Image (tube, rainbow, N blue to C red; front, side, top):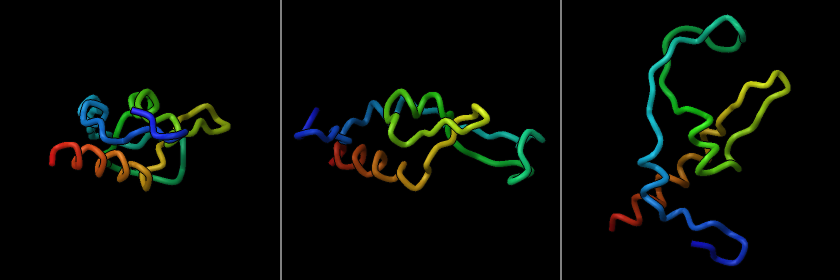
Length: 79
């Protein structure tokens, strides 16, 4: 749903379409190492493109601090 120019985040199907994954960081970057958990940026981009950025090196990055809004919206739909 749209409210003015804002997208309605109360859509549980958006959150349910995302896969939570486990992965190991590779050597293509030097910021993180080891085992981690996260989401697939391409999937997040399909439901909320405003919280995914494509970096200069071509890799996609999720703005995880903004994922909370999707989760809250999905929870509100449940209530």
